[in-house]
Length: 429
Image (cartoon, rainbow, N blue to C red; front, side, top):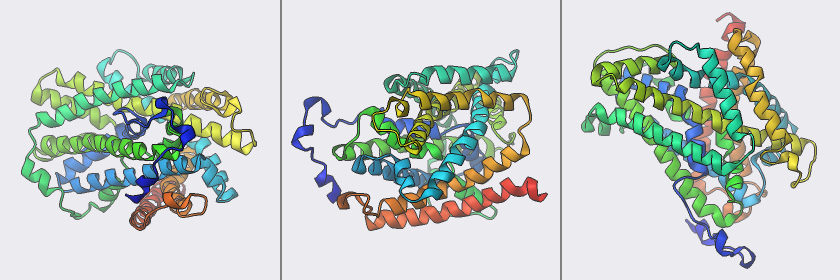
């Protein structure tokens, strides 16, 4: 693209140690691994078990969507030197208020869900230990790993977890000996009767929500902070989401080959992955169950680490910006006061939800705010990346604008559907 011609460092930046070099493990892999949680794997598995390979094309579209959104967040950060929250703030007080309420309520509810999700495969492996103790342990271990804000350590742990996911999830798909002809047929766009919401969810719901916006913060932590890193960022983002697409397609293959073709049913929710481990053990030997559960755990715990680190960086930026603190104030940085405060918020208050049924008001608030975030991200990126806030050479090209308009429309539809589900308890549905 013509933009890449601008990707030349000024003389003052042309130090040997700063030469832009892309590595397989980077912020892109972190954001992709964080976004692919157990819930996403279940959604893909269910789609494969109900519709076979018919919705494979939607999974591929989902990868493209995430590449577009994350590239936009990364391009904003590198082109302007400003955080995504700083961009939202420039749109008016409404954006800051929405984000502030969202990040507090979302963190409280997500903390409990993430810890429980990570505990589920461990409880299946070690049934003599109550799930709640594993959940508490996952929260505490996750908090300990990211507490100091050492990005290199955090990135290394994520890479190890992705390796475990690849070995177990992709390995499970290979074991099923998928039908190549049917896989190719699944790349032809079709929407079977009763599959519209599954299609939209597979295309838009797999691969993260707020963590997509954290990408710019991880770029800064990595040391990629000027436009000269633009080409590296794009490669990093694209390769990482192709890898995440491999996970999604692998899960759909397992659902299509192992469940759809034989009429096997599994439980709803993340318990379905435990059921799938048993199915794999019956078909391919007892060793497969613990191996798959380890991959299930890696997927869930990578989301814990990603959120505990990335969203804590966003919260620190939010509070520091709201208080008008300087850019070099240590409280806004990784490992600073506000960063650690949000880690504590994600870890300890949600433990109460592990002991009690979640209050209906919290569930409704979480559902309403969550249904609005992805449309919020897509629409605000569309506005910001076409505005004078961004240097002309880094603004959206027409094709990207078309893609963002379509993505925003899709997320509005998904958001309305999720909003109706969230309000159902209040409306008596």
